Length: 361
Length: 126
Image (cartoon, rainbow over all chains, first blue to last red; front, side, top):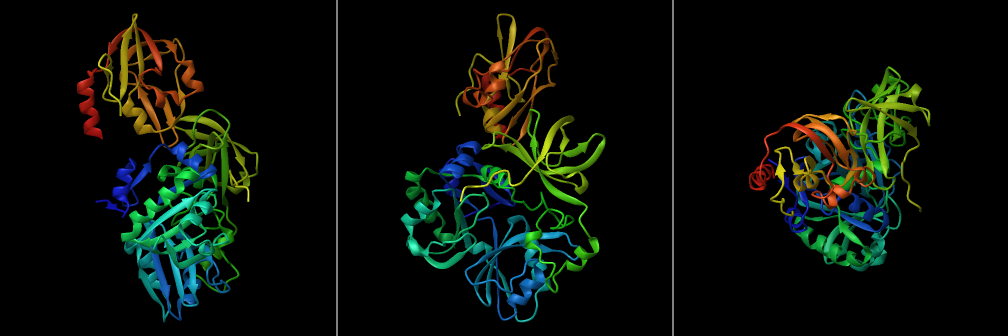
């Protein structure tokens, strides 16, 4: 049985097309994926991401626990910062990827993928170090993402300007937005400027309506999972279960920046060392023929299968098909022309630089 | 969702067909275009190709997914709608106007439904 987020009734009211996703009933689209995608690129979009999991890690052992569980290094992280990390298993594969918010020396807030939430929590509980408290608070919190170049203007209308996080990957908590107690971070999964806002379930509907109402003059529209996927793909952001999984290592899928091999120890470090220099890597593809690349399609050079696509779609901004693929590293040079098996047809595609889209800062 | 025109016949796989001057005109239903979402490519056969009732003659790509289009009739492709190759969104905008192919020399058809029977099929899938 699928769960409903606290915003389920709102999605029905907003005429969202509801589908099951990661155990939840969520809108795949409202108006249409292309319109929603372009709204986020040019103006603003509002997403319900309440399905995401939130886990707190607290106590004198919290920092040591994070450094043990996760591939990134949190030693020099300042309070108020947000940091991306992978969590590896003993074999160097990925248990999940996640965000870590630091609210105090012994006070961390982690945001994990909905589909991995229970698995992550079990893995963390099993591996925490002494003097550490861990709690899964996912079911108490709603989360909305306001994304797009007009996001800041909209937030300015509903909260004190000095409470808005200034820098990318920073966060504030106990912030008042329309009388509601919130966590707000300058983060997102679209490649655009924007904020992610966490508040108690009972505030969810009020928060949604507040942002919708104040966002209207800035072109804000509600956006579904469809646009969330096309936006993150244009920004080349990896998605668990696609670009990485329990087998693929973070180094193989190009997440080196979040893996600190010079750290003394973390779960999976030895396995990553033993696995050696990765033989595969993640590349971006754009199609040269007519058609649309999708996930799980084999990639060839001549008769040699060199890998497979992990995500693919039609890019509403670039107006052509783009994909990410995990392929043999020795064929991964930019501009290499490959063939992708699209439902039995070989379509030509070219290896291109990622991300496919970068916003002007 | 707008109404499925009474004068058309429908397949369970969400194509519509109508006979017009001896040709069978084939398109996608409103249910199909709505389920697919924004359509970005339509692949069509060539004039002179054979299509077979119940078999795929085309695929339609939306941002979200790809879907086969099944021929309601067996015959020969007499004409294709070139306009939708360049502007596939026409299928979203006006699915009962934006036909895909016209078929001649028809020798057989799928089980074809009237609008009321087709709406029941849709109701069961929704």
